[in-house]
Length: 188
Image (tube, rainbow, N blue to C red; front, side, top):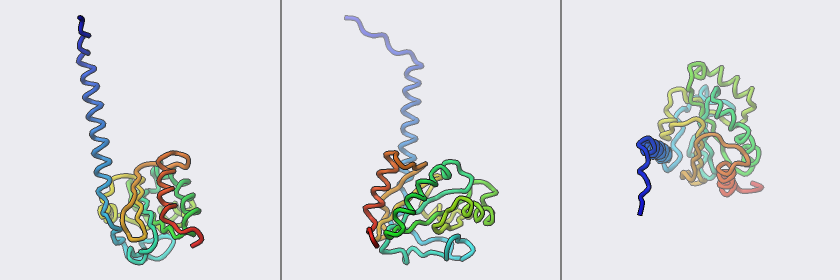
């Protein structure tokens, strides 16, 4: 009986590299789920730190599902997710969904409130946006990604997380939207 030749060393190296990459990806996903189990209080109570409305308080949102979106105005992945966010806002805000955009800057220009205000206006974002230039809310949710989406149920419990771009018609986005729809009240 003949035995197949052992794979060359480079095949083993590729397998080890693939296994390492998979482990890193899994660690990133597990780390991303380290968000607090309940909606943390918003870290910027000053009116100047909020666009499209007065400062929000987590306690005042109890009884409503809450979608928190971490984004930044110059992030191509965030901008690519904007049509999905606007679709969700149009469909579910009237059914009780509270949406809070959290603008946590990546680039220096994004630290300028006027730049963010102009971007929100230009992009047609109508839901409240909290300016998180000091990363305090980013740290409160143990976030590490742009864009990132955290869904809290009406009791304020974390029930869903998505990282990266979301697009209508894609399985991950559609599943997340179904989760949102399950928390809202039609005709509210």
